[in-house]
Image (cartoon, rainbow, N blue to C red):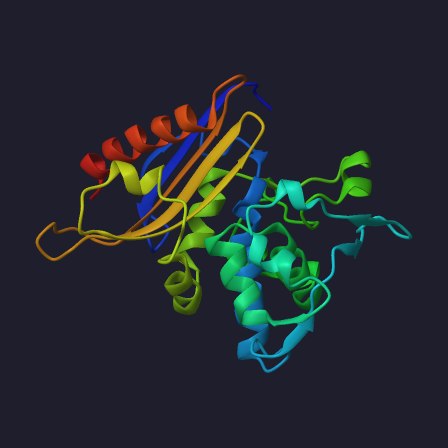
Length: 253
């Protein structure tokens, strides 16, 4: 794995590549793993295996993917206060999915993943045609797994494939995204942008399904930008992604 990374994949929603840069280089997923979790929830709902409108208990301790281990989330590491305020009560899975995507809620994600299952998320990744470089294998902040070297890893190309297979119900939720300082900031007004960000120390990512207006012309497309830069601030990382999004707009088919 190279140290610093600016990986990009731009292409059609049929998976055709239009522009790429280090698109097969793996990077830590950060919150981008929440997209396949949301898709997996929709799949299980559509098959009648779970009910997204069912209420589940909100709790902050979880079973690790390391057998016999558990871990507890830290509220200070989460941007989604609403889910934490409801800890100990019950919340519909559909609402937890919304908070996981729109507010990038960690607690909401892990409660949702508990209902969906890691195996279903892995199936979503595999059926999208992703390579073995992309692995979504644990929940957020599963510290026993981290100590064991088990991590969620993605590539730009594989995320493009996942975006292309994103259900319309999930794309609709992404349109309400709270964090719009990266890809959306680099694209012209009017285009419909369904994006999901991911950030953690030295990593700033954004992925999006973009649908230009009739006047703007061109096909809908997927854009993925993954950055790993030591010492780069969150704002500077977003500015870099926005600049690349502007270039991608000019290079689209």
